[in-house]
Image: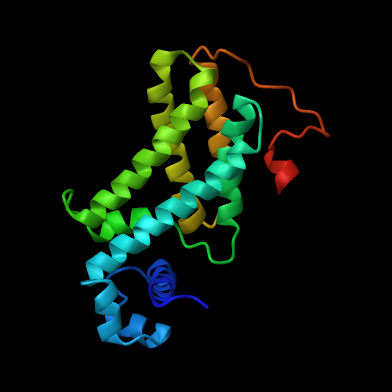
Length: 206
């Protein structure tokens, strides 16, 4: 059985993700979790503290899931494509409703707001991971710039999937990434993929 804190985080994350942060009040979280308001405030002294805890847990789970999928492939090219494949799988989940961190930054726009800073930290962590993946594929001096470009493409894919309903948007983002890599004097070239290859091609993993 879930403990009370876990129950509150589960309920809050589900509601915040589906409806937004400002639209969901403490009363609704209390009602849907079945936990008293007094107990909620024992665990989280404010709504902002609850949101911060939700984002911290979401960040850890998001990055752990993506990292595990990426790590299951061997070559740098496969691992980079796996990032896009993982995002497409996420977009096709029934509960997909965009990115909680983009929403958090939008609803808490002040750059020094702790919730905005949590969103920023998440995106910086994703960019750092992408840099780690692309480093073997390009010159050292270009890795940071390339990671920033890949993150920009992924962020665009997230918005495209949510707003336009184009859940295969990571495929276009991956094609654009290959073009950018080809212009960045990559250390290795993209593999020729056969029909029975284990590379994480979108069509193979759809």
